[in-house]
Image (cartoon, rainbow, N blue to C red; front, top):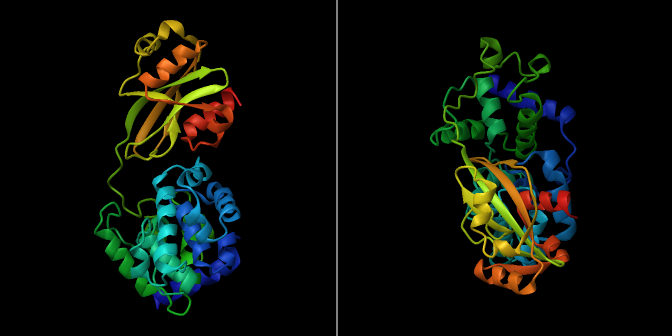
Length: 352
């Protein structure tokens, strides 16, 4: 009976309080998939412009599949977690090449596609095809833990099975899409991590956490990501209207993006020490050195400085380019290259 009340009240609440989002106006699996990938680890208000830009540029999965990866990364610039963009592109190509442009309609088949995890597979299957597969993300963990009094530690991988089982027992087989959207919205806007709106909550009479004063304690999450500090010194070499950059090839979050010459360290280096290691530094004019810019990632805290270096002699410029394995780009070319948001913000504030 309690579970039936939970489902009915949640769907009733959603009918009055749901957010007006463009991907809810369609059952097109391409648009639903695109929205879900963009919104992974991204707030709706931040992700919305990117979703609209992608739909405008690539209205079909076929057009996305045909696009150069560099173009996709450039459009993604600023969202972070760039592996999502690379997986998005690769998945689009798989859909076109192996599925003739049609998304599979089952959870298990969707799960086989690159970049699609259990949450995204459940979302597409339910929202596009109304299959009764329940989504489980941070919002769902929080709602279910509080309402049903679940103390299982959500930082442990085994806990997912417990929540998935309950979520799939709750989901109505004939109204899966609306239920999944309801619980996601409820967690995002009503049953929030901090200061949830318990006073106006339609579930307060059956909510375990509300009745036992445990709202702030649930869900249980014991393990926290250890954040490491890194210090980045970027060196932007300029000659006339050209700038030296290179493509980042390492298997990390910025793979495939373009950056200035970079020195990474675990401690802040003195300006003089940094410049000592730059080739032909006696022939270079140091125009400016920025103050450190703090940039937070999920497991890294980066403090970045930018050295703006003017090289007046072409031979010196070419020698630096060759020694540091860099490429020369015009200002307009630099603007079109996909870059970490740190570099994009610097260029925007300092130069263009």
